[in-house]
Image (cartoon, rainbow, N blue to C red; front, top):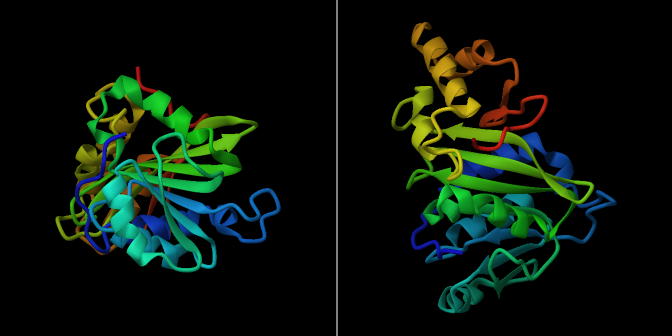
Length: 242
């Protein structure tokens, strides 16, 4: 696991809101199969700003920040409070989780290493829980993440999550350089074809506040608006890389 060297306040706020809008059952404190399990932020960053924001986003659930770098964990512990703890760890998590957020952590791996990282992280996720893993821009202006669901002991590639704040435009190809590590550069993957269909539909529309959403509606029947972003959930899941 590589240490996240940088982070900025607000960078993952849109993602957190998107996850809450799309998968509220995973963040339900009363969900019987997940009761008592925390949300894990894997990869704290140089300062724990996005972990602190995650606490707000998933309240009243407990949040555990995990990082491989002891100095990062030691620094973050100054921010501990009831419901927020920081622990040392890597892909083999020190707790059982209902949701694990892993952002901008796997991008330094080679694509072939990603499935094993997913498997190791998923081993600590309860059935019905999620791993949210992907990449975003330095300020969170655009991002894409896998939504991997634990089902019957296996991590399933259920969906891709997309979010964009519009500060650098709203064209769908802005997502291309923010694809998760295993999809980036795979020109034959269906996600790349999706982006090109979405871009073509976008260019065919006149500028408007809802241009991106209107283009999504015609680009793919499995692409839907959820909260501040979009969810692509093909009937058979997101295919693995070729």
